[in-house]
Amino acid sequence: MIQEKAMSLLQIRQVSKIFTIKRLGVAKRAQVKAVNNISLEIFPNETLGLVGESGCGKTTLGRLVCRLIAPTQGQILYKGRDIFKAEGSYSQQLCREIQMVFQDPYGSLNPRKSIETILATPLRVHKITSGSEIRRQVVQLLEQVGLSGEMSSRYPPQLSGGQLQRVAIARALSLKPQLLVADEPLSALDVSIQAQLINLLKRMQRDYQLSMLFISHDLSIVRYISHRVAVMYLGCLVELAGRDELYANPLHPYTKALLSSVPVPNPKIEATRQRIVLEGDVPSPMNLPRGCPFHARCPVALRDLCTGNPPQLEEVDTGHWVACHRITGY
Image (cartoon, rainbow, N blue to C red):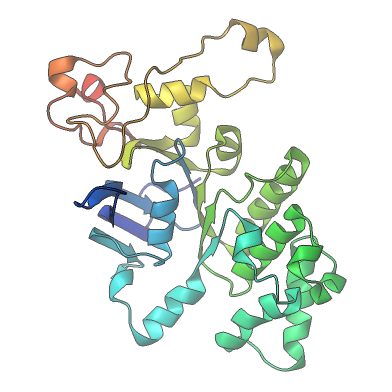
């Protein structure tokens, strides 16, 4: 388990990301608050699960961590240094030590490049090795993710979805990173392939001493693979706790609703347990509601309290943080 006082590998400090878009037929541009004032930490050898509905900002946060986009405000520190002020050798270090596995392997792997070229390119660019040694390392990477070395001569269209995702994982691990951002890497795969890749990621984490930000909407997978779990809603962080604590004692009404939707493999328990069905639609990120972003759908919201100031994330128990006026007090 993660030590509470361990030095964090990654710190996300009050980060927001606002996209400006032009709406059809409207002269004024709209602002979309994809990530809204989020603070998080990831510790060495830890997997932090990030869950929430589609469109809540999970992928945007993952892309911020990988420097694919820049924050509108806030800081992201890796080993104590701001990743968006990186230059020269430190920028190259970040490229090696922070890697990402994308949700769609078909879109993240060049169909015109062979698997050998895809895996060899990072090794050449970062001068990890050269010459005939590259070929040996490519074969080794493929075998580590459960593929035959003979597949190095194939092209992405010749592989299945599960095989492609293994190649994507092999590419991310080729530089031996310290932080892996996995953005819903299992969502397009069938259950048997999902199980294989989950076990692969856990083994790779143990062998490579990896930290992971694991983004998913599948709460069962997140429970199996994560040490701590963060819950997002409409760009905001609403709850953060250790895995066992969160699943056994969810405090935020949104977290309770999410967990109530997870199927239980016991038919008797499944038939008797109560499902929390949220009413209404998710508000538009272009027009966020005042106060708590969840109040319009919350079954326990109080009009005057919850439509006032937005609730702040507060620690209500050791390691258990929640942003809810009804929980943290008026």
